[in-house]
Image 1 (spheres, helix red, strand yellow):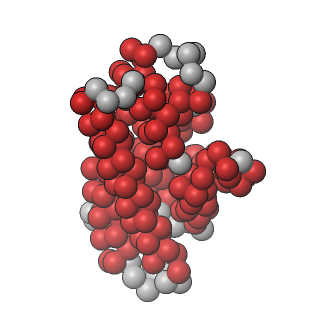
Image 2 (tube, rainbow, N blue to C red):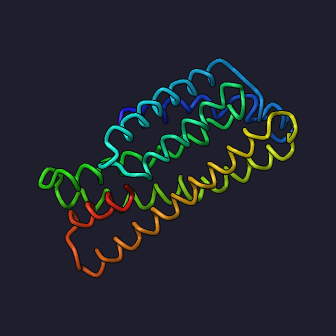
Length: 210
């Protein structure tokens, strides 16, 4: 939760960086531009995902393959930005974290029954669906299309592993997000039909996201 607040707060100044503002006229800068504050934010993200990957490995039985893949993939993406490579896109990638607080509340409410009131579970579930779809699917695919366009225009300026790896990993994460969202919609449908309580649905949602 703290990491989410730090990530979202730290990217605010990055939206006005010169490489993002001049992306259309300076594609090379969009992909290969570097500036100190961007390096700081990228380093913070890398540090978090190193820890995240370690935790997912240490407690694999609790978090599952989905979270582990997310941690490793994000570590590659943010690690490559320090070359520099797509550093101007760091805020676009970190914006995905806007849905993380709702994912966390859902996860904890499913594993600590009786702690979170059912009304909060319901409201959190609604906000989770809205934020997840908005930032991880709509924005995720749109941002990836822009990144892919810039990478295509600058093809050959770097080893192919980085542009290909970034596109493949991000599309894989986008596909994983679609899968998770599909599972959440199915669980929400069960709630609407009244077949399960909000807390049992929260537990099922947490297991699906795992």
